[in-house]
Length: 298
Ligand SMILES: [Fe+2]
Image (tube, rainbow, N blue to C red):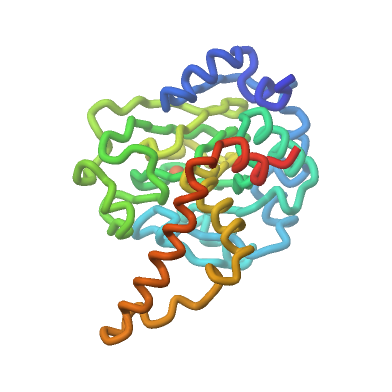
């Protein structure tokens, strides 16, 4: 039974959720109480002060120039408190590492979602000052956002510029080279016309699909708990297993010598072609189960 997913989407059904999930459509519920009581009862989630007082690490502070993770510094909790009062957003990263409850929910939610064991899951806690928010961007990860305190508006739009992005991108900043190579349309400079608005109150849960454009603004001082999953693509599954397999070959483990030496690169090409040809003999016998047996041990 998918208990944790059910707790986050109550009273809606799994089938409703997965219909949205599979079509990259946001999903929202309001008024969660009993089903997430174990989360809202966590002492460090009682208030921002409680969080700052109990947080054992530095806090990521989003600088005001571009309100985004791309422009951030690390600060002590004392400095972060002052910076928050001055309107800067705070991010408490990997909160699952300080909480067995979060860590258990995170793993159970991954399994409820059917995501790979290679998934990088984490809890992020965002504190946002009234009137502030994040600049329009998309993430390569998927996000379950639980509003714990305050009210925050979200604007989300489908991404028609690039399907299934593997890195995040903030409007107005530069794109990484790989993302640029597979983006199918130039990036916009403002949220697209087909943007939907969502208002999150304490007890709301918003699922933000991977890659969708979004921006936010807090209506009041706001605290949100995110379950964030960077799940592997087929590329990741394939290359991870292939790498593991090739690592058993001393020939594949050889240094790729002379590849940039104009006089000796023919030796490199011959050697590499031999390895590729050998591998290609095995390729027809590959099947998905062999790969998944490695990444998803039962
Ligand atoms: Fe985001």
